[in-house]
Length: 159
Image 1 (cartoon, rainbow, N blue to C red):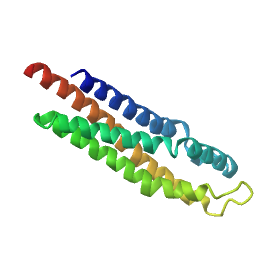
Image 2: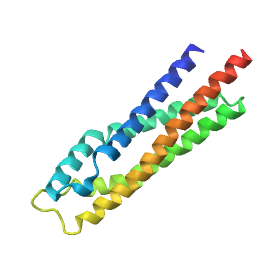
Image 3: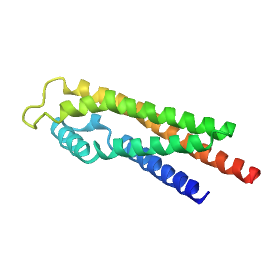
């Protein structure tokens, strides 16, 4: 039982860090107000710092949540909440992989003296994908917390 609590705790921490990161980007980094050079420098710095770390954390959280769901398969509500949390995590991961990361890869090829014309359209598309990712990640966190609380409640009643 202690191992399950530890897994729940670690899973919540990982998803909370992911949700906090994407929320922080949303609140602190609206790229529409930046000059082309500032956008490029900030975006490339963020990609260098986060492009490997966040997907790895997302994969770890997805595995942990799957493991927790498997352990809750005899309970109706916790099991379903873990599964729906996983769906939200997968949605955030797919948006990242097929929406944001291709744009990141393109932006990483730019230099300050050779930013292509029309770059604002790509920036705005990245931002729209990011807004979807924020929603999915926060939903995943809320669903995971609800799953853990429900799981703990079910186990305390059963035990």
